[in-house]
Length: 443
Image (cartoon, rainbow, N blue to C red; front, side, top):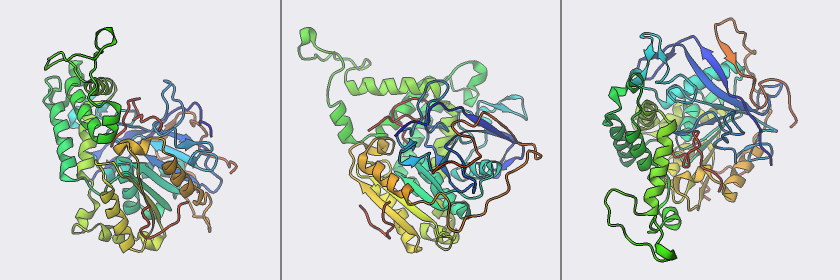
């Protein structure tokens, strides 16, 4: 197994406004993306990878700044998502802070940074933006869409909004909606940010400051939810941060403000790193998009009816749903809700509940069983469907769209050389980078 090597991000500009679920419209915008592998002659081997809360389009390989892709352990030549067979696409969503149009970019109506005036975006809006990018790449149908956590929600939304454009859906460590507890965690994090004196009602860019204190607290809170109690106990326990004198037992400092326990030092370190690369307005937008995702809401609270309306069964979509036993943020019971809704519609689904100690972050880590499962799933996906699925004619540039970048690790043209048992309910450690090089990708 190898790496896709050095990659160069690309940017696609869209001059046509993007209608949003809120009724607002996002004017001309840009999407940052990366590609790995090569699109085949039939344009049928594309796999879209959807990112989680603080990740980005940099899924695999080595970026110009030296950072490693957040799913590099899963995506690459000979890896579970094999770039020798598939053309893999990672897209940074609108509202993020890693290259796509977001709150720190200029609002064309004012000539100033959007800040908190950036329109609220939803998971459905992101999927529609991603579909526009695929149109420009000349990809009519995806071989698969896959994501973990918030990325898994986007994968589900693809099946519900554009079921004719995808053949396989991978939803990992995700949920069909947030629980009240999860919404509560997000609200506490947002309040930490907006009450920071440096937030300036979301227009802190103009003041030359960053609401770093709020971002640190938000990240510390979120990071706790990404780890299991067992993994935190094994890593930190009640170990004190300062060693004792002469190698002896550490002594309590009896302080309420300074670091006393090792776990405190770890969380403060994570918060400091996060506040150095993530945008506060982006955090507000993405956590609210998490809150709003609830496809059953438009169907009387029935997820089964949502899938029925999308005609997933008639179109032959096949699903992989994966959960982890110690993930208490998006517990296995939430994945089983998805599986039940699919089973109720006679939609082919493979489900695995993996006994792993890492908590929610398990979807980012090296686990032999997890990776073997994903590998087997992709091995059963035909890069060229039988019969071939028609795609659109490769687009011209006469509509005002422009692209920049050199194609990353493969470009988008020319051929290249070339699971789990589908059931109706068959239940069954690398890095955890989240786009900015921070441990703990989380949602």
